[in-house]
Amino acid sequence: MKHVNFNEYKAMVNLTAIKDYCRENGRLCHYAKGETIVRQGAVGKYLGVIESGYFKYITITTDGNEAVVGFAFEGECVCDFNNSFRSLPSEVSIVAGSETIVWQVSFKVVQDLIENRLTGFHERVTDALFREIYHRHLELYRKSPTERYLELLNHHPDIFDIVTMREIASYLLVTPIYLSRIRKKLSENGRT
Image 1 (spheres, rainbow, N blue to C red):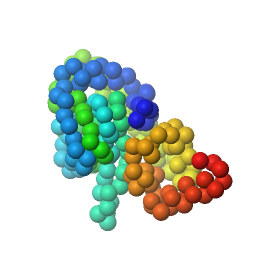
Image 2 (cartoon, helix red, strand yellow):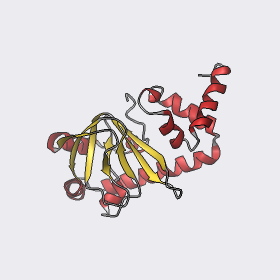
Image 3 (cartoon, rainbow, N blue to C red):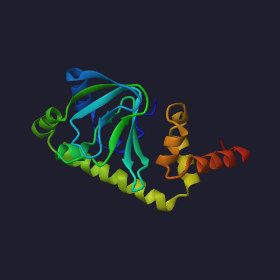
Image 4 (cartoon, rainbow, N blue to C red):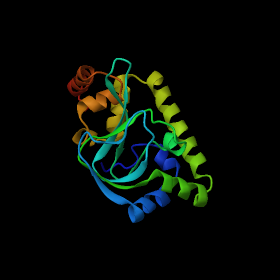
């Protein structure tokens, strides 16, 4: 995806040193669609920079279904940063949404880099993550599903070329049928 700032927190924190480190010292790993880099309930072991493809962040709902809570696209870092940094079990699984290639390093190595050479980095990332998550939470109350869909489409017009409608519907907290209705209504009104 050409829009590398899908995740707004990444514009709030300079990730260049981490990305460069992964590209220079990482191992090039291939993930088939459906393979996980982190499994919910396990401690994440890796941080990577996506060379091609994408990952989706999913959680399992109380009724056993998958819910998409985020994405990471080409050029972005992929990991469960906060939980991995604290050696806590992940609350999400990070699953390849397509065949994906990643420059990957051990999170422990990245953690040492952060603690020894990037003073204050962990706090800046944690703060930026909190701000983005809080903003997304509030948007669920401020905006209708149609408004959230239009905003997503406005910022990332090529997302449907990469991500399935089912995944986008889950991310927007609507059913695929409801998303189809939104799209149909907007099309009839000449808005998309």
